[in-house]
Image 1 (tube, rainbow, N blue to C red):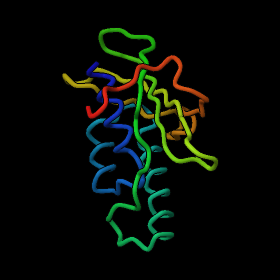
Image 2 (tube, helix red, strand yellow; image 1 turned 90 degrees about the vertical axis):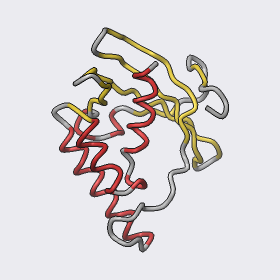
Image 3 (cartoon, rainbow, N blue to C red; image 1 turned 30 degrees about the horizontal axis):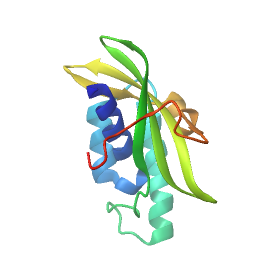
Image 4 (tube, helix red, strand yellow; image 1 turned 180 degrees about the vertical axis):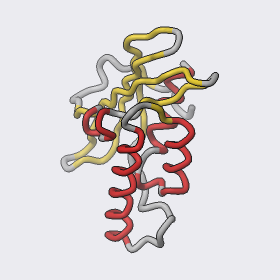
Length: 142
């Protein structure tokens, strides 16, 4: 379960809305893999676009993240690697949107680290899903 909780926390901190004061150290300290620098570049680009749209002072968070990780499933696992599927829910164009985000977690230096998605692009790891079937929900209030 440590890999699941790490996947949820790290992935949400790697959003442009969190701002560079959050996503830069998170990426530097908790992300591994050959596409980590590309992920940083993509986050910085998205952050600058959001910041300009919202008129946010450089360095400040860019808006609010309205998504919530509501469930998970565990895929392939070994002592030093776990595939975690996260169910993320938030507002969509026509109501509630559910996104399945598949992340690879690696045991590095006595802690779980997230492997950067292919090409540093979250879209390569995310897909819209119609329901919560196959996911275990996180306890309410937890």
